[in-house]
Image 1 (cartoon, one colour):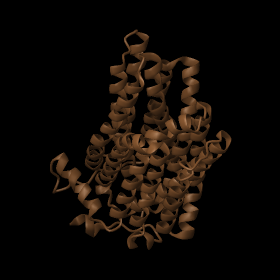
Image 2 (tube, rainbow, N blue to C red):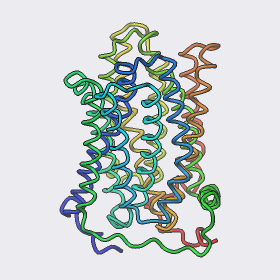
Image 3 (cartoon, one colour):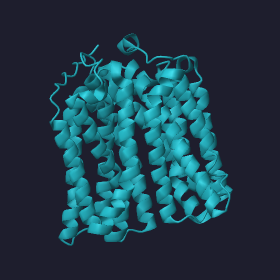
Image 4 (cartoon, rainbow, N blue to C red):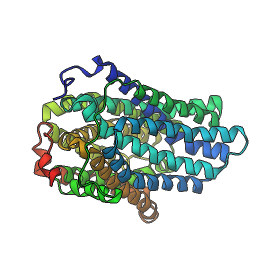
Length: 422
C-alpha cells in the first residue's frame, strides 16, 4: 500500500495541485469542444456540412489515438505525457489565433486543429487514467475518481458558458488563444508536482505498437470483470452516438427550445454530474461497487426516455429534458465512477494504459457507428423514434452488467496479476 493511502487527498500539496490542474484542463477541453466549431463558423465561414466533417474528424482522431495512447502510456512515464499533451494542445490552438491576427485563418486549418486536439486529448485522458493509481495509491481510488468527476462536472458546467463569454468579449480567435493558456496553466501545475513517478516496467514481451495495442484488447475481452464493463460501455456509446447526433436538432426543431434554453440544459447536466461525483463514493460504499454501478446504468437509461417522450409544449418539454440532463448525468457519473475504480483496481499498473486505450477504442468505434446510423434511421423513423431506439441501446447495456463478476463485486478488487501474466 502507498505511504499516502491513509492521508486525506486534499491535505496533500501534490494532490491539490494535480486536481487544480485537472479542473483547468476540463474547462479548456469543454471550451475547445464547443468553441472551435463556433469559431469556425464565425471566423472561417464554415457551413453545416463543414461542421459535420469536423465532427467526423474528431471521431476518426479518437479512434486512431486511443490504442496508440494506451501503448505510449505503458511504455513511458505518464506525467511527462500529460505535460506534453497539454503543451501540444496549447500550441495547436495558438496557431488559430496567430493565423486570424495575420489575416490567414482558413477552414482547413480549423478542421486540422480540431482533429489533432481531439486526438491529443485522448492521449491525455488515457495517460491520466493510467497515472492516477500510482499517484494517489490504489487504496484511495474512490475519492480520487470522485474528485476527478467533480472536475469534469465543473468543466461541463462552466466551459461552454465561459466560451460564449470569451467569444462575446474578445472575438473568436482571441477566445481560442485564452483557451490555449488554460492548457499551459495545466502543464505548469503538473510540472509543480514533486512526487516522483516510478519508471515503467520493462516488458520482455514488448513488440510493435499494433501488437501491444492488440494485447490490451485481448486482455479486456478475456477478463471476466473488464469484458462486461467494456461491452456495457460499447452499448452506451452506441446509444450516445444517436443522442450526440440528434439531441440539439430535436430540441431546436421538434421541441422549439431556444439556444439559451439548450445551453441551460447542458449546464444542468454539469450540475447533475457534480452531484453524482459527490454522492458516488457514498452510494458505492452503501450498495457495493458493482451494484452501485448497475444502479447508475439503470437510472441513466430510464431517464433518457424522458427525451423522446417529451411533449410538444415548450415549457413542459424543457422540464422533461431538464430532468433527463440533471438526474441522467448524475446517474451516468455514478456508473463512470464505478467503472473507472473497478478497471483501475483490477489492472496492474504496467497494463493500465493499454487496457484504458482498448476500452476507449471500443467506445469511440461504436459511438461513431451510432452517430452515422442516427441520420439514416431518423429519415425513416423520425427523430423521436430514433432517440427512443437510442434509449433501448442504453438499456441493452444492463444485461452485460448483471454478469456475476460485476453484480457480486462489493469492494474494489485487487490487481488480477494472474490474468495479465498469461
